[in-house]
Image (cartoon, rainbow, N blue to C red; front, side):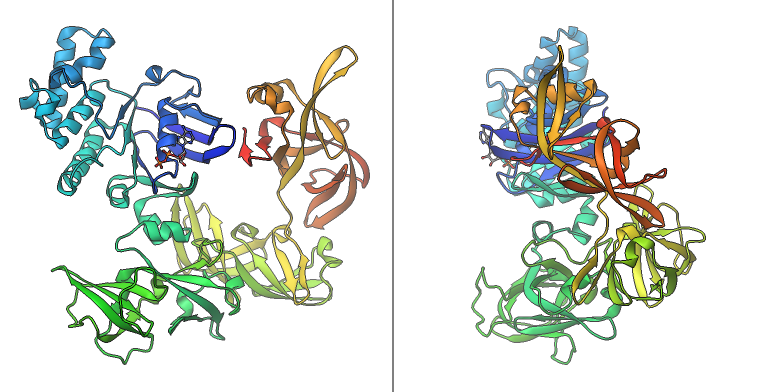
Length: 621
Ligand code: ADP
């Protein structure tokens, strides 16, 4: 039994082809994790890195409390089951299962006990004396499972184990593997391109595309809260429908979606989490509507009716699948941008060739940016709020606060729009702004997101405490994390909380000693031994690379002797920050004790420094 951690794992072939990029995942002990995605997305490569069959280009792989990057596959205590079974054709089933144990010199009677127990679990006892060629595909796959089970590994790895089986057998083996996971109580990592397999088997699913993790979540959450159009389209059958559209927010807060051939009105109660940057009628979005959320109405009286020409009707007994197109032409075209699919359990008597009316469950609409394809209807959204600055005070979210000195020069009296991200509001006693909790969502791991009404605006706040709808709360605004804009553009940006430095890693002789430095923005910063060790572990080529160094601003402190910088300005947001120049680079640091402007010294907590290969955009550690 073991946890498995993949931390910033990359796989680069031939120094340039990135097959896997920045893969991060903490797999809990006994968890069933599925990697899913189309062919070539990097799922097998990732699994093979866990198995030790593929070298890890960068990042760390931990199995239990052992760093496994350079541990031999046989010492990782894992078992892998492949698609092609990899059985010895000239050995009996018994000997195939016993093979690994014999290699490990396990006593004969113990082998016998284990082989028979595994055969019993898998229902293949009666075939123990047969050779693989006298077995069906499903039986062979069970033998391969048996061989994995008897080794009693900490982690089971499966690489598309069911893809050689027919549909019926696949469904049966799916439930068997799920049952096996329950009885073995061991960590499973399972690779498949089949989303149904992923959805039915995984505790959590990792959706991959082009070497990048798209989203990691439970099957339910992937279905309900897909973070991008790819995940939305990949998870769920029949596939989600997509319609190109533009959005406009009305006076009442409702949002009108104008698509090609129809208009939908999403009522205010379902639009709080739509990003306001997309409701000005100018940006293209995709509406995502699952086939279950668009149904024929049986008439044409409904307000939010989509008129469409029906091209195909598939009667499946328990449900009917209707293919239709809002374009005039009812001929079924796979690539039509206006075609959609509707699933209904009621028989509404619609036939191919009919013009029919469909209504949409607007509560369940998904919306994606047409270019980036990222959702603009976030589970934890950023909202915009009107605000007014007057006589040194700022009025927003139903309350008033003194305008922080740092904003005085930036926000002259007038009206602004504030961009309020979830981390810029904190529920805190005596916070100064009053709110009422309108809805609560459990994100897991003791994190909740609350929709809080403050004045006539709703903001979303992440919080660790359990609260109820209707609770009155007091909230604090973190003005350094709020951006303000008006018609002239951005008036004040939110402060960055990460310091990014571009440079190189160099070695130089200082007196008789060789010393190592980060050479960036015309400043040399000596590095400590522990950091040098990590840099050297990346190979000698580290000295030739263009690098990016990142560190959280709160891991940089002012000291009496260290890296020389110039404090250009102290920014007072209630909490104080210093605008600092390091050579030609400017960044902002939190100030804990008084810092005068002018010359100063800073020190980095090098344990917390993240290093990237700038050219490959690859995190080295
Ligand atoms: P999947 O299992 O998701 O189908 P893989 O992990 O097998 O995908 O492959 C991911 C990517 O890495 C693919 O683009 C593939 O072409 C590439 N790749 C795999 N093995 C090698 C290799 N030995 N050399 C170069 N590229 C490779």
